[in-house]
Image (cartoon, rainbow over all chains, first blue to last red; front, side, top):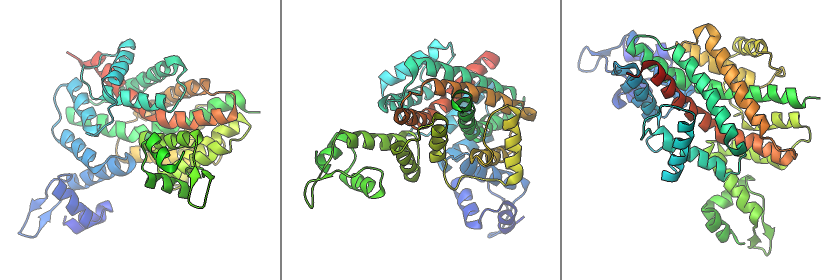
Length: 204
Length: 204
């Protein structure tokens, strides 16, 4: 199909599709002449994926591109695959509150017995997020709340792992797209569960 | 203190502080003359709160303002208080995928035995988020993954409730600011827990 048809099929403007092509978010079509290229079902699927990541998942176009690159070249080892997926999702300018907060976050994670590699970029990110909470005077109940969050997160992660397909390409897609698109669901469920817990405790 | 001192104390530019004053994100100082006003510790605390909500919590300025309004006038009833807190956090243009998806989300929530009011704006939001996941072909294991997410969210919410202070003003602050600033922590813990679960299953 021509670019105009790809636009019609996906509901994405031709100018936006050209931008995706220039930025490497969409693979080139088959060249038919100096001014014509032809696109197929793989292009439709890719455009829909980019829209899902950006619109529903809230990723920046730069993060969406990192995800696309990871999807196009998945590592064979399933544990490495998850690391690649997660690194694709972290903004390069992610917050870092310095070595003390990273050490604090690392100690918490070690306390839960989690097997996380030294230098994992999620540790300074967690440190910065904890610092923002502490700075704002939010109550964490001497860390017991954080422990309960960790236990809940571990259950979510176990559910995540249960859905990973065998094939590397399908597994990295599920790991990345599944995590990005279900993050908002986890947060909405948290709010609904707060209402449920509040009704149990306080409803008259 | 003068505006320049408030700027120095909070690290927020005077022009930004004037913008906050115009938009109602910051309460007016005490008028001292036609061109001078005086600010105190309540202004320092408010500016820091707005920065935390916007920079660490990722709220839009419009959402931050809704939060400020709710904080300034908390309802007495503790269950109503949570509803006010949650409505302040929902973007007015939040996604809605139509009545079928809202009904689907409502049925899921009822299935967990959660006491959520008809017409709660979180239900169409959850419906739209579920639709995005289904449209992207993300595997939810016939709904068992969603059930496991709900169980984990319920544990998070129980931890949230355990930290609510008695006084309404302090409780609504903890409900709103605590939720907004710990949302990113929940998502980071999910990714770290994925690595932990992956290491258990796949590390060689």
